[in-house]
View 1 (tube, rainbow, N blue to C red):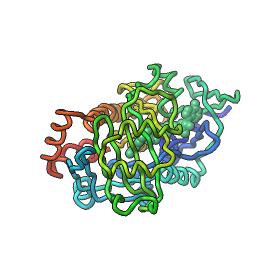
View 2: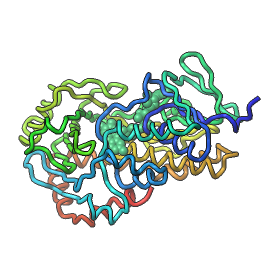
View 3: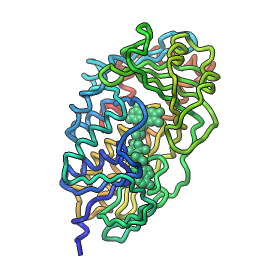
View 4: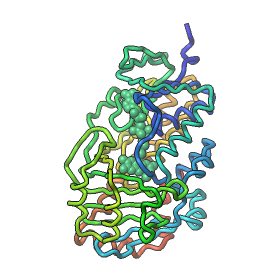
Length: 392
Ligand SMILES: Cc1cc2nc3c(=O)[nH]c(=O)nc-3n(C[C@H](O)[C@H](O)[C@H](O)COP(=O)(O)OP(=O)(O)OC[C@H]3O[C@@H](n4cnc5c(N)ncnc54)[C@H](O)[C@@H]3O)c2cc1C
């Protein structure tokens, strides 16, 4: 009989978190088997922002340069009022931010980040990548785990890492806290080619138009060849799963009356994809025996701090560190990993909600927001985000 410590770590889910974890564990010499439910290992979606903290983690995982190679490094992040067009605040992200945090700030396509992890996994013989392998259940046998797949197969592993996202089946079994919380916010996303964007509307920076119960963000992607657009508004609609095709008329109801720059860009989009935004309350205990969680399965968050993929990548680094410290006692390693992570990820989950409220403020709240933010210097802004960008 095989010794359990010869068996691979099983990872359910081959998204950004699952592949980051597979890469990080294999770098430490552990065999890994990734079980992904989809027919293809591929990321959908659009652009994501990458704060300096993810580059700290990517540097330790040996993947900073390949991620930067296809990314775009904006020089600033600007918030504008979607009704008056006034600039509320502008935070430099180039040289000054690099000097402060020691790492760049970039934006990239989700596909490009995923592709870097995928290529790293493919180049390591210790990683096996399997598609159409949907986990439906598992058993912790004390000395390892057995994962049950939809096709009836049972797969033995040394441990299970649930990287199966917002609606995690593994979380359901070990935490059991029901369905995610529906925020009441919906994101519509689209990507244009550079030539589809009128020159007077194309901006090299990250621009966020804050409106009453809406916001709209745009920035270039993939070395400037693409342009990413995200429009968010309040709605009580709920659909489980991401990336469904969206009804544009609903969007117009919410953005009607905003600045012409906003409306002209929104008009350029033929097909929007829709994400119903959900999160959960932070928890501190997401490991049980030989099973743990990572990324959105552990701490799903709203995207307002632009940190879900960043947190999943940090998780992957710390998980592999803790496993390498006590490889003979994985339950202890998993406890050490969640101990390292839960306050930081919980803070991002909660602060993301606060940022969402700020972006969508109306009336006096919006005036106060503008007054507070416009009074800040870039140094004040850096001080306020040091807890997030300055560590990992
Ligand atoms: C509108 C929006 C904007 C965002 N912007 C940013 C940003 O700017 N910066 C940032 O860092 N993050 C951002 N995020 C968040 C980020 O995209 C996610 O946090 C991140 O992708 C989570 O990765 P994950 O691997 O944990 O989960 P997922 O990407 O959800 O991957 C889970 C994987 O598990 C698979 N799976 C699920 N169930 C099973 C099963 N039972 N068996 C096998 N496989 C299974 C799925 O098919 C999927 O491949 C944004 C999110 C949204 C919605």
